[in-house]
Amino acid sequence: MKSQMIQINKISQYDIGIIWSLVSLTEDNRICFRHNQKYFIESLTKYFKNNIYLQQRSKTKPDIQYVLKTNQLDIPSLMEYSWTERNSNIRNIPIMSDYKNFLRAYIEIHGVLNYAIRYRKDKTKYKKLRLRIYGNINLIKSINQILSINTSITIKSLEILKNSKTSILNYQLLDEIKSIFLYLQGQPYCKEYWDDINEKLNNPIIDG
Image (cartoon, rainbow, N blue to C red; front, side, top):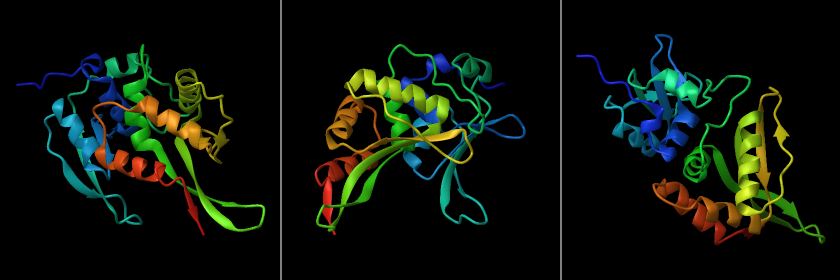
């Protein structure tokens, strides 16, 4: 019996965020999800009952990732939400009335909170938090605007990478970073990601 196709409008906005971040098409036109954090792949098994398996990323990248492949996601309905493949020159954000849950998933996957080296006036070195969000220029422009509207943070200039289609959205002020994560808070969420975020927010500056 043929498997029932899952329409994108039957999937939660949080899980659409995961799909938008991870989905790719295989040569035989199947949907494939890959990530080194099992949580995100497992979240999709509510809809797609295929088995998850482990895979080495590549010959040059020996780390392991979790993989789920399915032919149950209705691709035309995905495209109605403005989806294009991950390597497309232009990727749009899906059409939604509210983006909080979508962005929580997207930023859990494509947002990195880490420390950047800074120097004081006396030349002593310290490390200060910064938030970086990666993605296609068009998609990141939309995220820039949505975060600005919902957190009252000014629109940021994007850092454009050499391929001319990928960009980085940078936040370096602690109050702005806190405002973004306060806006994104909710359920479901990746506990491992948020535990790391909260620990770093409690230690925004490291000497040395």
